[in-house]
Image (cartoon, rainbow, N blue to C red; front, side, top):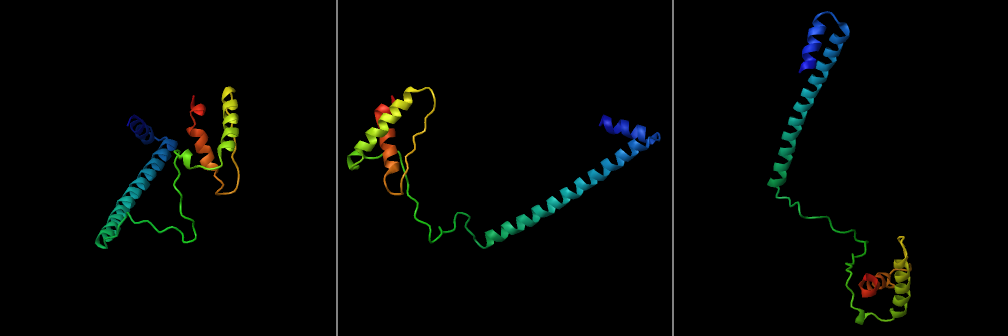
Length: 136
């Protein structure tokens, strides 16, 4: 408020630069007021649209179905039953050696497990993750 008081006092005294600054400030203030009026109008319009949604009883919890050609999502968890896993023990032991060797270093190591889908890469990673030797 002190700036406005000083500007009006100096602008009234004939300082054209200050008068121009005050005019620009008032223009911006009017623009802001117009914008706020427009926002209030848009808010009323949005409320009317929301009321129409309620009248039509549209349920916001209904999501579009998955794309028909998209494969179903598989849920993965870190717990895997090792007794039901067949033929992965040698691969698991190789990976365990890599993990244990990497754990002795002070740097962060990345061990990639690559292959075609369905080969058991995630299961192998879960077997190593769940092995107590990897978490000591």
